[in-house]
Length: 204
Image (cartoon, rainbow, N blue to C red; front, side):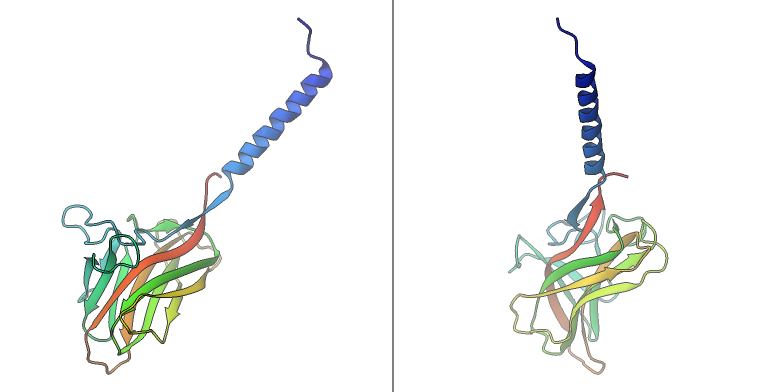
């Protein structure tokens, strides 16, 4: 059998190094994903007497339900109802599954809502940017918001970009509807198909 020349060995070594570098670059590359947990509110309930919609919790005085009538897509949407001024829900905080590791910089996002609350003056998706990787510490916020919601009961989309400040390590989310001080009507709003895009590294 013929031997392998020194030139061939050098060429094969270069190929091996190139392949290793390619694998290394691939492992450290970032994939764009939707950072919002349970973004279509399809999954629930979670755990023993857990939240009605997995990864989400209503604020005190607010009723959160998994609504299977007229979702924007899929099988369900989230319905929030409650007293005047504000109805809100948020993903869970420190140490809970609703926390997502993320990075500083711009994050494109959107959400869908429907309501007949003619008194509504704001509908919003909020991101809380945490300096840790487990949603703890002090968190500035970014929002995708409409201050003139359409209240015809049909689905409407709001889009925008939120900017995570330098040092951001993780994110949690909130959604809600509010009306101006002095409004006395109860609130009722549905949310569906929340999206906040971010990069998740696959390697060091």
